[in-house]
Length: 261
Image 1 (spheres, rainbow, N blue to C red):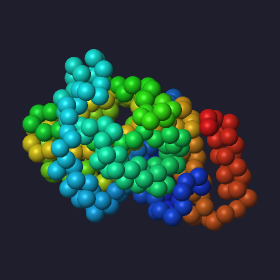
Image 2 (image 1 turned 120 degrees about the vertical axis):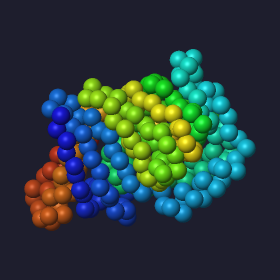
Image 3 (image 1 turned 180 degrees about the vertical axis):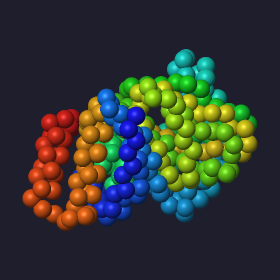
Image 4 (image 1 turned 90 degrees about the horizontal axis):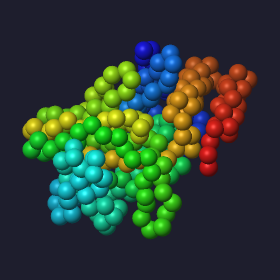
C-alpha cells in the first residue's frame, strides 16, 4: 500500500471560498484509491461546547435500534437523539452548515445531497458491532431519497473523556482505528464495513451523517481530490501559469464527465 500525506496551503479550486484548509491524508493503493479523510476543526470549541450543553440536557434520547433494520439491531447498543425532533433538526443544521462551509469537506466529498445529521451517545459498554450502512436513506418531508456514498462522523467528545469507542473501518488492507478531537471529522466510503468499539469509561458523543456525492464512484472521487490537491500545491509554490490553468481545465472536464447532478 502506498501512503501519501498532503499538506495543502490554499483553498481548493472547487469549494466555497474563505476558509483555510487543514492537513489531511489520503490512503492510496496501486490498484484502488481508498480515501479516509481526517478533517480537523470542522466545529469550533465554542460550537462543540454549545452542542454538548444542549445534548446533555436533551430528553429526546431513544434506543439506537429504532433507526436500523433487523440485522443492525442485533449488534447495535447505543442511544440516539430522536430523528426529526426540533432539537435534532436545530443542532443538525449547525453541523451540516459547518461541513458545507469547509473547503476540504466540499473538495473531497463533492456533495450533492446531505442527509440531516444524527446524534448518538455511547457509555457503560454500549457499542455498535460490524455493519454496513444502507445504500439508500429516506428523507422526511417528501424530500428525495439520498444515496449514501460518503459517511461522516463529527466527534463531540474529547478522546480523554472516554475509554474505548474507537471507530474501526475495515477494508481490503486492514482495520483502521479512528478517535479524534472534539470538533474534528472523519470521512470514509459508506460501503465500508465498520464498527464502534465498546465504551468502557465515560461517554462518547458524536454526530454522523451521509452524503450523496456528485461523483458516486469512490475511486474517481479520490482521483479528483488528489488532482485538485496537487493543483493547489503547484499554485502555492509557483503561482498561476499556463500549466496550472491547463491542469485546472483537466480537473473540471473530468468532473463534467463523471458528475451526476
